[in-house]
Length: 142
Image (cartoon, rainbow, N blue to C red):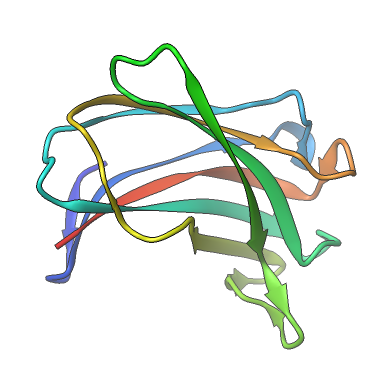
């Protein structure tokens, strides 16, 4: 998905995986593959997720696997993504559905080539209920 938004970023990629029955089982690890061609820019990686108001946690622990171009090794990063605070959900909502776009670390450079990102929920509850979809968004920062 390519598009221009504003004058500070170029949306490069966003894709989500739908959770069957609104349950994210820990064994389900959606993967997302994309190509980087511009190595002079920094990129911001986001975790995106939609859930219902019945989701009972204020965060989600995920394992983000990254396979870089030319590498046979997947680097795994454990991320604690905050979804709510004392005032309620941090994301945007419509009716009882909430959408979150949370940055994972600071913007960073990428080498040219094909990357594969993999997501796995690593919460104690399995399956994790009331999750509609989860995915990755990558934005080029100017």
